[in-house]
Length: 154
Image (cartoon, rainbow, N blue to C red; front, top):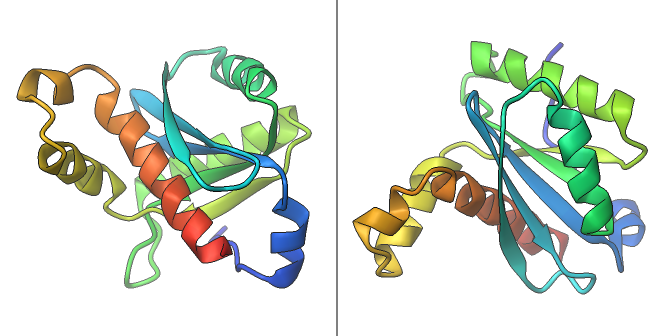
């Protein structure tokens, strides 16, 4: 069930033009959430969701509240094209998400986004106490995934 990242095409650009996009950074305990504006200029962290039984329902509520037109989900692709247990878990999550939402769900490469999120917070001068807040790294990782996707869409 190997998945590949979404290919950025002119058709995809046209489909997403003017739509708010949400990004999810899937983790076993928490899922970071970020959103961009209709012009695809700013990717803003929007918190996180705890992995619960009603996770997809909670996400759907957030998608509606944020008036999203599409969702991207980060997948930590391996350089050797093997599929890790985490990738399999994310596949299951994506399948459930696609079954329960009418929004298009795209898969993007997000290898090392959490590490990059921690480094970004350090470089921005965030205090250790702030960086350690539950979910902070998850939401910043989602925003970084979204920012990278928006750069590729340009």
